[in-house]
Length: 78
Image (cartoon, rainbow, N blue to C red; front, side):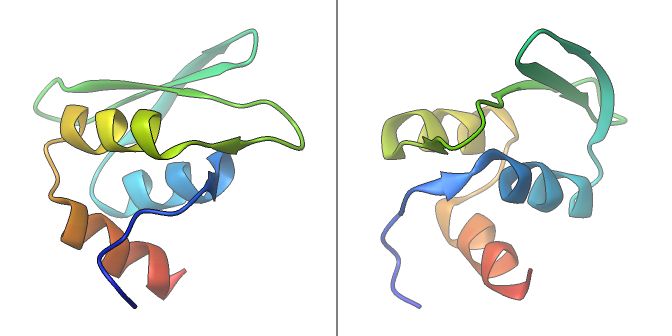
């Protein structure tokens, strides 16, 4: 897989974050809030039929403290 970000379903993003220690804390409307043991919080918008765009995906990856390459590797394993 190349190092380019692609459009991704919110459910897949949540699965990747769970693999690196995030847990779903709550959901408010169409937003799922995840938190890890070090206290980092990431909010994922979940809209049916829509994918998360590259810009927002990059922001989520940064908030989670991951590298783009690490995220893509885990995404490919799902």
